[in-house]
Image 1 (tube, rainbow over the protein chains, first blue to last red):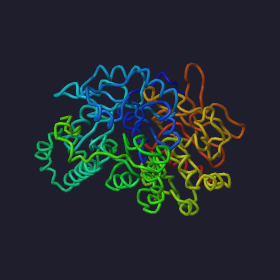
Image 2: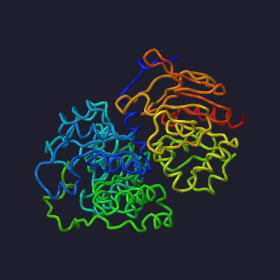
Image 3: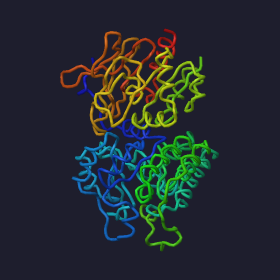
Image 4: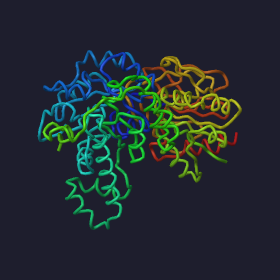
Length: 299
Length: 196
């Protein structure tokens, strides 16, 4: 019989595989135990534990950091679904802390204030898998080369405005499709233009997809938003402020879960959209001055 | 034979391609009429709470449960193993299972994601080199009835825990063969379980 001490932990396959298990699901931002339970009851595949949702980070300003370990552990104790948590871009010590807490995934997130304006975390050094944001294919592949096991669009977090997530999903999808139509000898220049490692560019050109799971995030607030993102090629959806900044959070959460599964069935999405109460009021991305746009963070 | 892969949530596409590599064109199923038409079912890895809640809210739960009870060959990996268990030791609030194998499972038995691992496994009915088992927040079988065949186990701290089991036409594994490109478990399901 095999013994568990002959095992290999923290390899790329179990890290990327973890994200495969989240596909077709909704990951919800929660700030306390009560919200985490609502998310789990609504059918969320995971929760993101953080002290302030992006909309509040935006409203309150100041430096935004990793959450208090006590708060994360309370949420871990309250639900059985995976618990993710965020660290600042480049802040490897925050990531080391989250690894000791045994969170299931770390989001190296532009929603928090960056800790390093040049380097991201070397994610290969961790047994915990990382998800990172991207606005285009080159950025996604740079994060994967640093060890990210899952990618999400950045969108524009905390706005309830889905337009940037749409732009990023279309951009990533479009650039992948462009690579698949190239001659092999054109991929060298493509890698240079994407500022991404050639081996990853070649892999994407051959397979027609990212080597890791691609979720969408940033401004998704309604079942229809979730359905559109899934039709644009997302493997699943992160909803940050959109649920718990709305009227009936439990109902909206369950509705977004349904729409993410039955995204091609407009009738199901229509039914899910009924009587959800007030949606997150939101901010138009165009009204946010460029220096305050979170999607600009990360390089 | 029409083999369906339950496509409510999880890595159903990986199971579909594993079937394809075995020469079987599977079908993703997520409505009552689609489930009524299939001859065999694979329940993929994913979040068992999410899959059971979705099955409940779309009225699929009793249908799937009845089809399994009526003898439809079924294979569940990881979350799928939880869903074909008779009971769960530590269910989330309101979490139910379809049933199919007389066993009780422990969810996330090996721990959280940092404890997820790969290991070589010897399985009854699978010949050749050991099979690479990929365990991601996986369950194990805590206890089982006399009609259940244990095909493979893993020893943790001196105690043996079944990680691959079969009862009649229902097969379950704690691990994810669909992530490895090694299709021997899928072949076993198609050749040995479906024809039983």
